[in-house]
Image (cartoon, rainbow over all chains, first blue to last red; front, side, top):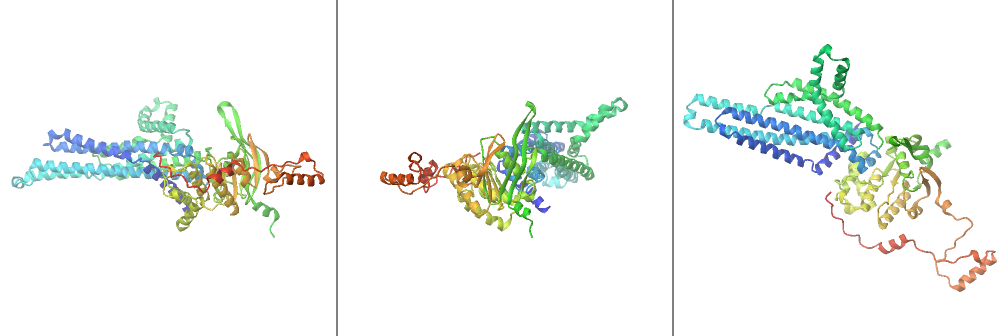
Length: 308
Length: 303
């Protein structure tokens, strides 16, 4: 058991090293540039309204929406592309033969490669989150500086006006609260979970696909269906007796086979400032875990039978 | 007392019984027979050559013996074990045909990676890496990424990774393919060293002369079937013929005296031929280039 884990870790670490040395992380530079660029742009667009406290709320909300959206989008491409080429590349370069001729089970090979992608995604999400946090912090500093300017904080007149001090303190507290919202951590954790689910789907497809393109296109389609299935379920099942048994059956089958990606749109609620309890997030994590175990289990069985 | 059948079985390193591999060509509604009813018994310590044209079943045999592919019929065994078992795989090493390995790792990291997969770790792994780097002569490749390796260097690091866990059997699929004659001779010497170390080596090659130099036994394959098998001595001996080698050039007078002696022994003049033995082209090449300095190291290609 321990040696099996050691082999999975060795393969996982090697997969991560490969991605890092092949400069996959350079994509994150683009992320950082896009994030900082958008942040600067939006702050310039809002300059005429500096006297309005609400403008900063809107700016920070934009940066939060944009940052989480960008983490999701960049992460999605990294998860999809890096997982889709895991097995085809090993087969093409015949490196798989050198590994499977060693005392390594096929399941260990597959789990090791997947673990490598999870490590890569964790590293990418961590780095993107750092850039995101830095951008938010910059917005916080700008907001406080602007509030200082509006209220002329530090001047004797400001100090002598308790009403102004209270309004200033409220505004600064509002900015800090919005920037340092602990729910952002919850949102990023859910985004990360969604990325791992995407990688899991891509891994399953790649165990029987004959090309990376097929894996990418099929995973993308499943991802889209996963986003639409809950809407379809609601619409079709709301028709009650009107829905034929076939329609209900089809929707039920899709719900069973394809993970409900739309449930992760709860991240939008968090970003909108609504309170989403941790218990709900943990439920989603549990749902994702069950799906992931099934995805990996089926991947192992399919890969075991594959001719290499 | 040990049962005699078990004693015999323990000396068999690799064995196949009725081993067959078919690939269904669904679109053409045909079946490709890559290997047909192969029966082999390779003894421990033997150097066994698999010969045959491309597509004759050599690589398929090796992959089946390694448990990398599943037979359609029959079975393969490594020291009596199923080849896909971890226990069997601990006892085998494999160098695939045209190996690529991970271009982003250097020589040292490559051996470390494969060593860890085999459960070799710590000081033991360090010592083993040093030993193998020396054995395959890759001191200048330890820190270089494999993507900058020449073909010969790749084959040598491939051999080193195959030996990292000190296996008892080595499968080498075309170990000299695409390698220059000097590198090819080094690999041949390495096989001979492995033989001296008591390892079983099963290899395929197109270089017949090299096979002749190192193999104890060979099997010749054609269209997925083993068509000939035996020891080289038995297969290559020409019946009804004797060769005498004298390490000196004979004068005409000496030749005549020898003819007379042979005539007295009842051998007709027409059956006797005096020829000068020739070097093989490989021997001439090696004699010419060996000892010369190696060319400058190839620059990284930046792939």
